Image (tube, rainbow, N blue to C red):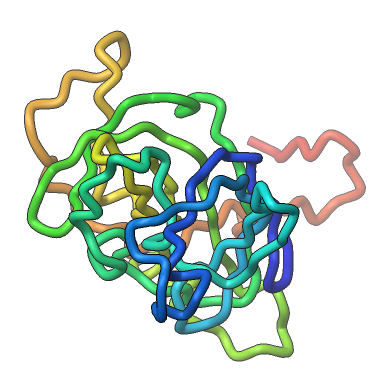
Length: 205
């Protein structure tokens, strides 16, 4: 678990140049690069750090700033591509082996868009000195799954905006009507403890 910054897979991307010039110029132009890390600032969008082909290491750009295909129609804006801001300062990144390169249908805005899994960014309240956030509430906690969309853009979406469409594993017929988990589960109860010196925790019948 990292505070503020976590590593990313070395994903090839193109940066929209207008984001490199504070939207003063560069529209319609792109610079090739590779994602290096991701930054989480509470109540702000995920921010990505990129090693550019000219050697510059450019930080703090939102997912809207990136494409994997320069022919992208750039149809979706930041609020479409990332449904939620981050709720915590502590994050971790993981490439889930079971999802690696799997195809998916993602709810982006009002559309279901095809995409391919890249990685997952998760968050937690790991430091007791900080006030707890929505990351500690089961119903409100959100993982951020990063996907490369078929239209050339990237998105970061929670699990409940994605349907995985691997034919050998899933049979998608439409969004399920599940409810978000509201429970906090524990294994340790009074029944788990033995009040004797018995090594094997054998109780009496």
